Amino acid sequence: MLLRGEELSKSYVIGDQRIQAVNAVSIDLSPGEFVAVIGHSGSGKSTLLSMLGGLTRPTSGAVYFEDESVWSQRDVPRSLLRNERIGFVFQFSSLIPTLTAIDNVVLPRMFGRERVSKDVYAQAEGLLETVGLGEKIHCFPSELSGGQQRRVAIARSLINRPSLLFADEPTGDLDEQTEAEVMDLLLRTLNEDNTALLMVTHNNALADRADRVLQMKDGRLL
Amino acid sequence: MNLFTLAAHNLFRKPFRTAALVLAVGIATAAVFATATLMHGIERSVDHGFSKLGADLMVVPRGTMVSMERALLTGEPSTFYMEADLADEVNALQGVSTVASQLFLTTADAEHCIVGDAFLVGFDRENDFTVMPWVSDRLDREMQPGDVVVGGGSDFELGESVYYYGQYFTVYGKLDRTGIGLSDNAIFLDLDEAYALAEASRDYDDVELGFGPGDISAVLVRLESGADPERVRFALAQNSGISVVAAGNVVTGVRQNVVALFAGTALLTGVLIVGNILMISAIFSTIINERRRELGLLRAIGARKSRVFNLVLTESAMLGAAGGVAGVALGLILLRIFNRTIGFHLDLLNIPFLWPPVENIALMGMAAILMALLVATLGASYPAVSGARLEPYDAIRAGE
Image (tube, rainbow over all chains, first blue to last red; front, side, top):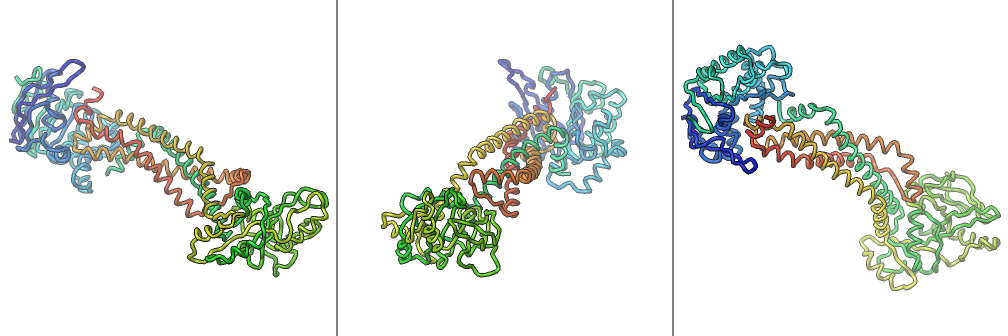
C-alpha cells in the first residue's frame, strides 16, 4: 500500500461553534492508482487531501505513507517527504510571480537535499516541453494564460518524480477544452512513471476517468 | 537559483517599498556612523594631545586642579603659583625620571602695546620634554634668547615678531597641532625670560604680572620605566600644599565630557535604531501576510520551516546591507559637507578635534554596516518565525 489514512478527523473551532470538517474517514491508495474524491463545496474533500498530503495535522487519526506514519515525524522528514515523494497541483494559480516558468519548475529542487545544478534545469526544460511549453520557459506567470500556468504547475509537481500526486480541483478555473487538455497531459505523464493520483473534484466527468471514485458528504465518505 | 536569488526577486517585487526601507535604514546608519566618527575624532585628539604632553603626572598648587585642567584642555589662560623649589623635591622622589617646571602667565588688555589675553608659558628648556620635542616647524638655526615657540593653532608665522611689556620676541618654532588647548594656543618662552618679563611688567602699574623669580605654576613629571604612579602620587600627597593629577585621569575626564556632550545625540540615535527595528518588524509582518499563500506553497513543495525563516531573514539582511552601505555613503557625504562647520562649532565649544585616520573611519563604516544588518534581521526575525510556523494548508487557503 502506498498511502493509508485511518479514521481521519478534523475539526475547527470558530467562535463558540465547533465545525467537523472531516469525520472518521479511512482511505487507501495503491501505487499507480487514480482515485477521485468528489463532493459538493464544504464536504471536506480538500481538508482530507491536505491531511493525507502532510499539509494539515488531523485532529485524530493517522496517515501512513509506505507504512511510515506521516504525522509522527518531525517537520524536517515530513518536509522532505513532501519534497521528494509527493507532488501537489492546486486549484489556484500557484506559481511564484517573480520567477520565470523554468525557475518555478525548479523551485522544489531548491528545497531538497541537493543543490540545483544544470542537469536539473535540463530536466525542467524537458518537463516544460512535455507539457507543451518549450517556447515559454523564460516567461513570467503574468505572461502565461490560466491553462499554461496550470501546465507549469503540473511540470513543477513532477520535477522530483513523485510516487504520489495530490490534485485539488486542478482544472477548476479552466474552460472545457483546456480542462480536457490538462487532464490528458496529467494522466499521460503519471502513467509513464506509474505515479498514483488522488484528485479532489466536483466535476463528475473528470471523476469518471478515475480507477475509483469516492464521494464525500458532510465530512464523511459515503 | 538559490535562496539569495529568490530573496532578491522578492525585494524587487515592490521597488518603492524596498527603496523606502533601504533609505530608512540608511538614515539611521548615517546618523550612527557620523556620530561615532566625530566622537572617535574627539577622543583620539585628546589621547594624541596628552601623549605629546609626555608627562605621567602633573603637580599643581592645591585647589587649582580645575583651572589646570581647563588650561590644558582649552588653552584658557590660568595663573596660579607655587615655589620653584618644589621641582627639586619632586625630582628627588624614588621612581621619578625627569621633572620640567612650567610657569603660566597671562597678559592683560592695556596700553603700551600689550596684546591682551595671550597665554604665555615659561618652560625650563634645560629639562624640557614637553615642548621642544614636538616642534614641527622651526627657523633654520638654533633657538636663542628672545625666541618663542607658538602652539599649532596659532596664526603667527615663523620669524614674526611679538611684543610684550616692551620686549620683542621672535617666533622660532611652531608645534604640531595636537587638539589640546595648551599646546595649540599658548606661546612658550624660556623660564628665565618669563621672569624677566615679570620684572619688566613692574613699569606697567595696572597690568603688572603677579609673580616673581622663584615661582612656578606646574611641575610636569616623567616617571622611570616600570615605576608605580600611585606610589609616587602617595609620596607627593605628603605635601599638603599641592595637588597631583595623572594625565590619564584628565583624559578620562574629557571622555566623560565628550560622552555627556554626545549623550543626547546617542539617545536620538538609539531611538532611531529602535524605531527602525519596530518599523522593519511591522513592514515584514505585512509582507508575510501578503505572501501567506506563497509561503504555504513553499512549505507544500517541501520547504522546511527553517528554510522559510532563512528566506525572510535573507531578504531583510539584503535590505539591511543595502541600507548600511547607503547609510555609510550618506554619512561620508554629510561629514564632508559639514567638515568645516563641525570644526568651527567644536572650536567654539573648546572641544579638541582631529579627524580619525582613514583606516579607523573604514572600520567604523564596516561596523555601521554590520549594525544595519543586525537591525534589519532583528526587526524581521519575529515575522520570519511567524511565517515559518504557518500551517501549509491554512496558509494556502489564505484569501479564499
